[in-house]
Length: 72
Image (cartoon, helix red, strand yellow):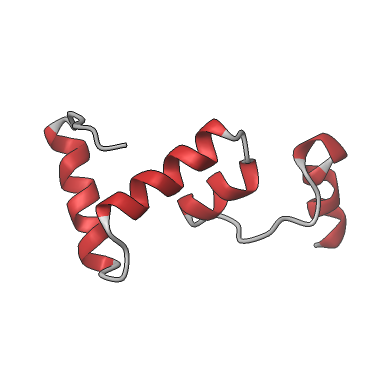
């Protein structure tokens, strides 16, 4: 599918900056990755996309915050 979307200027600047920092990633690939993560309700993919966590040991429903405190 080919489509046209509108990005507000502030978001467009963030996207442009991201793509400059990650020249191996195209706009199309970035949008596809974000949509797949969001639409498939894959929290691990969303966190990885955000650069927060590559792979969590447990999910939030398993008391992840408690395990974090115990491991410290």
